[in-house]
Amino acid sequence: MKITIRNLQRKVHVDLARLRKSLPKIAERVGEIKPDLAVLLVSDTRMAKLHHEFLHETGPTDVITFEHGEIFISVETARRNARRFGSSLGHEIQLYIVHGLLHLHGFDDRTARDATRMRRAQEKILRSLR
Image 1 (tube, rainbow, N blue to C red):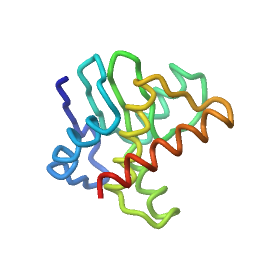
Image 2 (tube, helix red, strand yellow; image 1 turned 45 degrees about the vertical axis):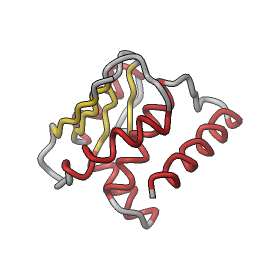
Image 3 (cartoon, one colour; image 1 turned 90 degrees about the horizontal axis):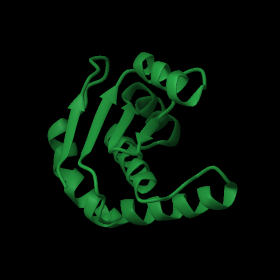
Image 4 (cartoon, rainbow, N blue to C red; image 1 turned 120 degrees about the vertical axis):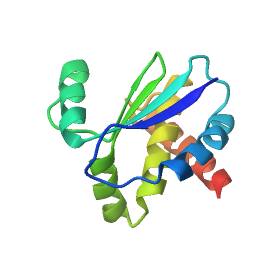
């Protein structure tokens, strides 16, 4: 599996080198994923457009995953959530990458039960990265 990461936004500084270094470990912890993976870091404006176009929801969201292997992450939302939850921007982005990979691995979070299962898997993977 080939993993690429692209920063398509300019509002928030992201340590791409550090993220690139963590991607193979994250992917290994989640398990084999068939498609090549593209992590695309975008602005809230772009994320809001994607959110509306594909999910018919208004406003930005944190992460959207497409089954062909694209994970879009709103860096502005990640920064806000990092402040809100007392974590770092890098940790928040890693969380969203793990979340996207789990979706690609068949996890879903539409019901409370599935969301709990997914959250536990995310936490376990993130703990293993420390």
